[in-house]
Image 1 (cartoon, helix red, strand yellow):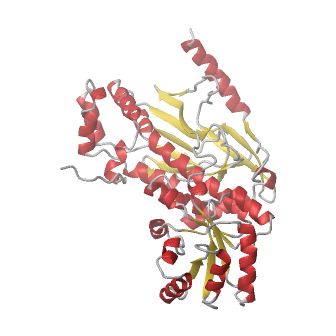
Image 2: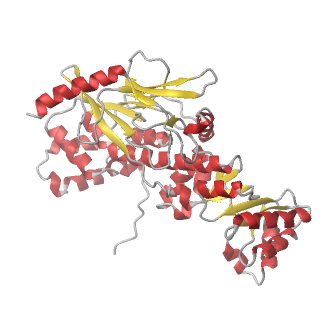
Image 3: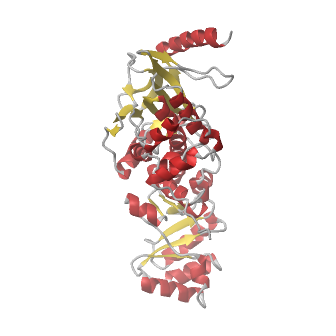
Length: 458
């Protein structure tokens, strides 16, 4: 009898968390004896709708993956038995059994702001290794960067009010919920409802009650008292199960130890004002009003512009799925290949998908207050003014980088946003931040394109 299976990832399964064509290409490289070092860069070709920047996230998971990737005996057996591998040499499967990542990685550290076309990660390793890891890197960086960026917009809209991640139940699976909680915290959230994320990451776990708690008792007032008996120092009550204003009066009877009330439906602007009046009349000025229910940055911005008296926002579906722009189009492209001791530029010039060759660096110019002025994408080692953003994080398969805490990453994101001038980060009609290609990079592109066209277009 078949037993239910868990699809949660384990370190033993990391090798085959990839697309099939990564493995067929790897087998082809092996059997063609292609072991030259190749350099790939991961970047986003275009910013998503309504996005004027990205908050980089996911690097820590990438480094864990690269230091733990392996193919179990069972995984190799499974690959060997796939029809596509019928004619692949036995040597390839022995290679997989002993697979480790041995390359060098440069990256823009998590929490930093980046823009379209800028390499977020640069990987140099034997070409088989760089190929096998592509899918995992894209999945990890695309998702977490997307959610961290979305969260930063929600936090910006909240104007220093508390924002809590409430989204696990609407995330695309439990694992996505955990990663979304991490990325949302990087983007500026104050806590998460996800207990596992709080446990693993050391970030605040936050929760109230559901309507089911209220409905399980004979009356609303009794449900509030009973909850307060169990949690006398942490009583935040959901007050809109039946009638929000009646619920507010019932909650107020808890007295001075009441911590907060939550409204999950209705006209949040009007209700928050009416509830605030009820609480203040009872001398409960300290009690916070929490709002939830299909919130996003635009709705929060609208609520506050209308004068809503809300102290904290619980944001779920819209944030952890980045609902308005649910997919970040990160790509991972070959830019350079070593052959017979020479570095050969690699690029594609497909229509609307041209890429730039060679190892690149991003140089950021700032003013005397540290505010961002301009980014230049140039060649690695090119003499360009500004701060280089890509730093070495791994050498010869070993991490050469002190991993920051999640709080340090969040502070990096906050500091970056503070130094990105307001016209480039506003919610709507943001200006395009200036990102240019260096003269050296443009010259290399033209030269490489001329050579490659002469070889491949005749």
